[in-house]
Length: 340
Image (cartoon, rainbow, N blue to C red; front, side, top):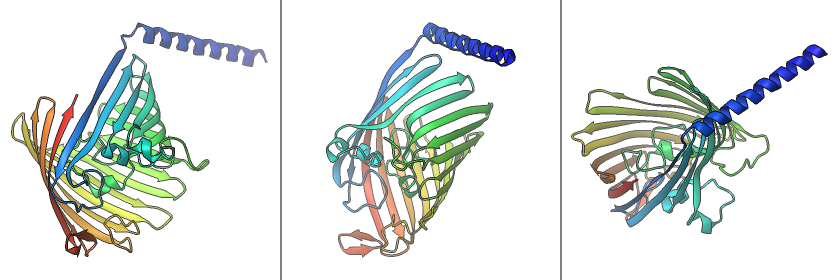
């Protein structure tokens, strides 16, 4: 009995010592408070758009205003990421508590706190954008202004807890327990959680998302290579299936060439196939689509100007334009983005 008592007392002493040391270190550290974000707006030449997310409104249109407040101490910190506007409303579509009024005015894109257990181990709790895919919600981090089918029908955000582990100089591991995909405010189905995992090796990432009420299984590869000092090739491939017999898969290449410090040209070639999803527009939910997007990017300070041409071609007349059913759509788009 004394052995167990002494062991318990020793464990408590170590825990108190660890906590006190962590508090002292964090108190001694110089905290960093930051405000950052972006705004984006655009013109689209056609009112007819493919079934992908964002940048689908005709004429002169708004994207979103994005405000990110962050606080970083030596051991811990938080991020509060707020979005306002049509792009933001589309990004948080899975927030069940939001009424239509709040969807158009004030929305939380990310809200999480993190703790650095060590230099190589970080725990994060809250709502954070997805780890799957090549593209993201913020237009600042995407080269193309419009988005792919793979991004649009993959998850946008997760709520849960994740552990990020630096396993070596060029190797990282992420493990997570998550709510149902895009259920950002709470778990709508009791004990119906999902599992997320990521393995990163030399800047190439293999991602997995599984579980939930639909028995989701999604495997995703995201990576890229600097072929020369000026030429980069990004790659994304994904495969999704669930117990409701919905399946989709796709692959996209993102070649980008930097001509100068201020101008770059990039493209996206995507092939996407679906079965039971209905993303492309077929009544049966089955079909194939290929899209070609070419984007210019002119940067001046914090301002980014992006002219873009996108052409989509479906395996049948799944789209609609001014003349009725069609198997192809095209549009010219010009976007203005300012980050701070």
